Length: 501
Image 1 (cartoon, rainbow, N blue to C red):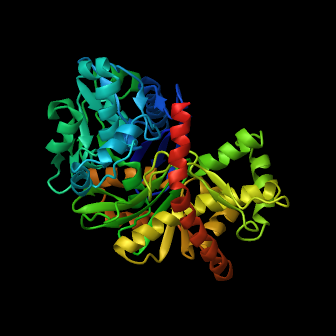
Image 2: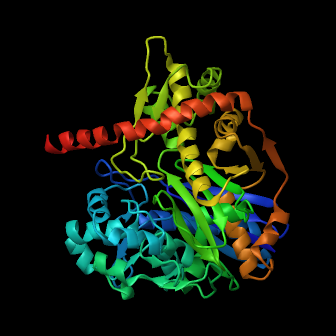
């Protein structure tokens, strides 16, 4: 029996079809461009995302045929927020994780006595990305919509409502909202009180293994299904990336570098970072992911190539030429260090006002040096999160790497050299999609437990670090870490000048 995994991202939606031996049979993809009506705002049209998902389902069902489908299982990006009316119609565009409109309310909340308790109970650092802070913004700045809203939901909840007419949310997506009590596995009353909403305005909490089979008749007709198929709710893309890499050991860390980035371990207990640099999200059965996400992954390189160098980022020939020239530059780009915070930053500083900075620029630095410094800066940002995880949970030995970075061997090697860790790359599909497929297999009884999924993973390739280069990078990384502390107040000062004109 085949499993269809649907991965709902912020720049792409994907369908990956695997068989019961873990072999990828086919994949489909649909681009979904974000909408940026104002600086710092990041939205998407929920119906565009739903229609893209529906098309992926149609393509997948046509490929598989009804009788060969075990289930459909879902992965989705975290932190999205959509307000809908009593009929389930959107009252606004969906606000994505990248949206910063709630930054000022996040700053205000951090100063309140309740802030520490919010982090300890929900495991979510206070930041504009969280639905908690988005809701506070809506309560004050979008009152008409806020007061009309019947349900506040994520994009996956919207898709399931359109498919089945029910408002349900898996524990994993709920855990990333800032509204969820991680220990008692329920909505957190004190967080709801701060936002001004009621439990009834949120979806019913269910397991990641929960599935529905009774599609709305009109949808069933569109999909041309002759029989009922389990649609498994699945989990968040971050949790599923760990499951898709079969990471259940704290000595292994899953690192994803795509548009954004993240570093996460899987833990059997709920734990938070004393310095509040990391998140801790419930998955299921006493499984949690501990780690941090960064805003500034491959999108920084895209910004440099498109906005500054005026080249086509998606042209593989141009991209490879630029990277090849840059990777010939010595470690540290001859004293050039780049802070990649062009979209503010989440972990480890959780500061929406953080800014990018190019430090150490000299007349002899060329385009290749700048590209090298930018790529190193992206890796430094991920390594910063890994170091915080190690301080909280213990030393990490290996990195399971996924995302767009894996398409460029020299970039993978650079990540190994900077972190000093061995890097494992599993051949096959996107880790989050694979994780969704494994959860689906467990939900319908094809797997007894998620640990068994490791036997289905394809042969891995191993990349060892160049320890000589790592010793050089350790010195540059120390400087990199110190620069944010030195510039943090200046970033705030710049924002004040801009705000006051």
